Length: 144
Picture 1 (cartoon, one colour):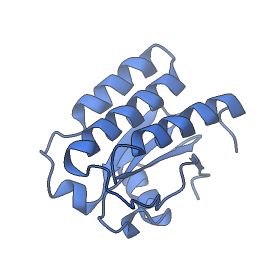
Picture 2 (cartoon, rainbow, N blue to C red):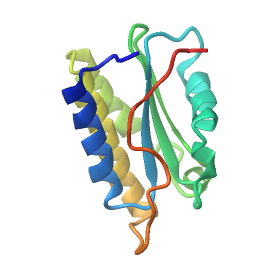
Picture 3 (cartoon, rainbow, N blue to C red):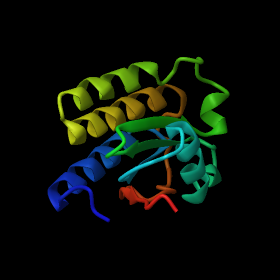
Picture 4 (tube, rainbow, N blue to C red):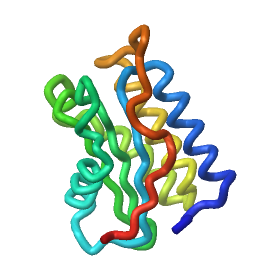
């Protein structure tokens, strides 16, 4: 299932690559058409399914969207949650929502990825010999 054309997918992938240049954190974007569950519950499910909890520093971030149902969530791993304030992702979610409300879905995702990278840099700066532990490609899911 491809919810975006090749150009849009490449723009999102490039944003992930750029964001990860300044942090040892790992960012993934996960999309599906619809979601009957709560977005945060579905994001958590995919977080583990995509093995994002297996990074060395437990510093993976998943940006999840269900396009047709207009739901989204951001979820961080245990390493991130131990060091960041409780409202850490609120400004990122608000910036994304502003773009989504203007029907700028790809720009909203890119905004979220970029802001996540900036925020991760504070707590998990890029380290020499850092390894890209997770794919930068969009994970297209089917809800099953």
